[in-house]
Length: 172
Image (cartoon, rainbow, N blue to C red; front, side, top):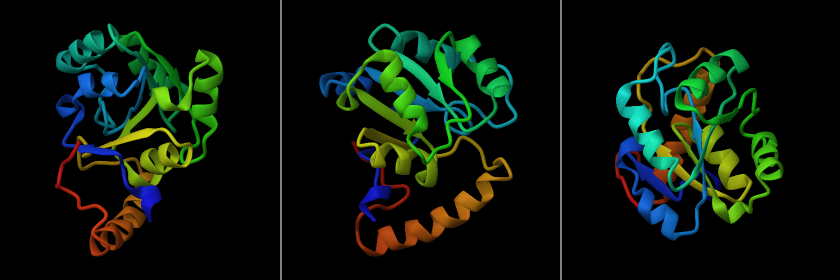
């Protein structure tokens, strides 16, 4: 069950202490797209998100990783002026392996930030990188995500019973 427990849990990407991540030696921030930095039907980057990413790029290499299509992910990455991996096949490590090879980075320098236990956190933890869970931005999900959310609810019940993790109890 520990494979589903994030290293950090915050309400959203704006509540993360990025200075603390830098102090930990994190150099690569890898963000999920849908419901982490953008609503699933959002096409234009909100100014607040663009401002955050511009700030983060001063201290980190910032990337987007998503199971979504190249067209969808590139649309957002172009606006944020960051690199991306689409069709990442999370929870498999394919996308992280690509990032590690391309940027010649170490796992201890990488951080996965996402809204789903079953893809973002599971894949990051299985690949042994730092993971941060954020609450989904919206209630609407992609159809395929409904299966993950159903499984996630079951996992969350077990994690809470074992006092390993509780949704809504934010921590660093």
